[in-house]
Length: 264
Image (cartoon, rainbow, N blue to C red; front, side, top):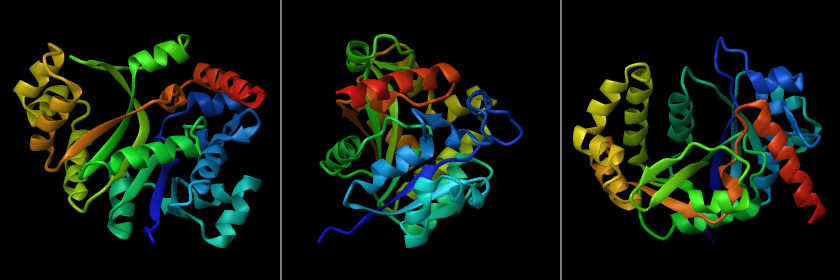
């Protein structure tokens, strides 16, 4: 029998910053903003619970009492299927703290991903298992997004073989992923000093990316030599996997897409 994979949902708020989605929805925390009447966090948890190979779901929240508010979380919380986790000073530290307790593999996603489905998670885990890596990140090709969701605006990483947007799905697949998390913490500490980040990654990798000289796969290989572990990207066929909610307009798009999903 295959061992269950624990999951981590990042549901914290940025300290000292008012979240525009929470303000728009009239809730205290962004993760509780309703998408078609259901809190975004609930939709993410329900998708994870529908995947048989997912085990305990850790939720990193600013206040653990938040998990007692949505009715849809009370039963899995009582059953121990979901557990609160502390929000550290940064996202990378929150992930590292949970990973230190669970070990590999650990699936990581975010609470502002209400279009997430069990099929997306299953597909990501299947693709991630094809080749060994310390860290696997899910991406969606720009062409897939443009064809399915021409009205959305996403941020794309551009390479020789096209543009890609993040899917907010990560798998810490091996123990050495801890080294990548340590590198991530250093980068977060330098987020206001971009040239130090560039120096950490190396000028060759930076120039190759800026000039779009290399493919996504080659870029991941070169980055792996800098970040302390093997990183790999897998491309998902789901355009909706790239839609997260950072602003009120994103929430409106999500509600439109959920209405289409229900109608279908």
